[in-house]
Length: 200
Image (tube, rainbow, N blue to C red; front, side, top):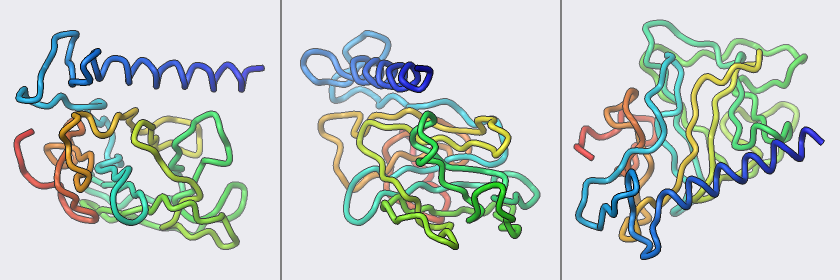
């Protein structure tokens, strides 16, 4: 019963995001005021609070979907302590970033300080050993991505709508601007590298 309630709540939140993003004419709106096609784009998500974060999302385009993680801290982070998921209510969508599902042992897999890691969301079946670069699920243009610790703490994430604007081209990603710190905006892809220093 609790699982059904979580699914319904997730769908209701996604519907609210979709309704809030477009008015009757299909133009992006921000705060209930018609932004029009010439207005500045609205950022999505919230600013990160920890050192390990979701930095860029590619939910459509040529090739598989992917998510880029970034360690903006001064010390390496062991990815064995984290999952990536697009559905907090579905255990089969929890992808172990260290390559092993608890309680199996997980040899340390560090993301260096200032480093980036791209995870391909291509529906690769989980095997033994697990490929830590290929998740067993995909994402859609209206979806969510969350970084969760093995203790159940949500570290970072975003519920997104892509494209945010009707005229947005398909060859852009949702990127934190500024890199590793801001909200998510449409930007040129930069997998494994710092996001471009462009003004949204």
